[in-house]
Each structure stands twice: as C-alpha cells, then as structure tokens.
Length: 170
Image (cartoon, rainbow, N blue to C red; front, side, top):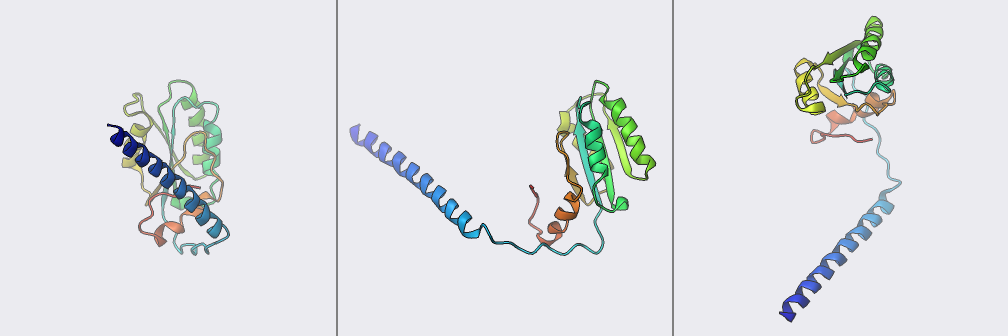
C-alpha cells in the first residue's frame, strides 16, 4: 500500500512539474514573438453582407447606446443589416423602437424583433432571428459591448484569408 501511495505522489508531482514547465514554455514563446507583426490582409474589393445581432433583455439603460454605436459602424450601409433581438418585459422595447425608427429613417437596415416568450433566452432569440439574417457573416454584440466604428473594417478582411477561422476575439 505504501508503494502505491508513493507512486501516486510521484505521479502527482511529475504532473505539476510538467504543468509548470508548460507555463515557462508559454512565457518563452510570448517573449520571443511579442514584437512580431503580420501585415493585415487587403480590404476586399466587394465587402460582404454582414448581419449584426444585438440580443437584449430589460437593458433599458444601454439599449439606445448599443443601437447608436452599431449604427455608427464604418461599413458600407448597403452591406450591413442590424437586428435588435428584444425579449424585454420593461420599457426597453419602446425605447429601442424609437431609436430603431430614427436609424431606419436615415436609410439603415435596422429591425426590431420582439418576442413575447423567452424560449431559449438570448440564444433562442439569436436562433429565431437567423431565419431573417441575410449576412454572409454574423456579428453578435452583447448589450454591454460598444463596438468601435472600425470593428467590421478591421475584422472582415481576415475571414476569407483563413478558411479555418471561425472566431475573431479582439
């Protein structure tokens, strides 16, 4: 029994040593490549259609800021679709409707999708709205995220250059 416990202890210590060694390897690789920069890919000749989905639930304090920031994206307006996916039970919907109408009057493709039930919560709202999404790419911004105006112009050129890419986190 003692031999088994000693072997288990040695295996545990060896595992922890290997785990610590991987930390040093990661640090070494970071230090070695921290100044390496790659040239960004060229901007596409024809920008793809992008659907931006904004799922919200009772976000009355930030919904207008979110819509305004998304409408301010520096992207060709005819290539941008914005879907506000609202499951709110407070006055968020009425505030959002006014803001959506203001941006629609400017010619932007902004729609408000309000569900009376919350089946699947925010993921359910995203799934339900996909039927109306026209974009080749989908960008999802949570209510507390304010995208920089250049977000799509900086990220979209990377996607077609790497067919294995499925997520860009900035």
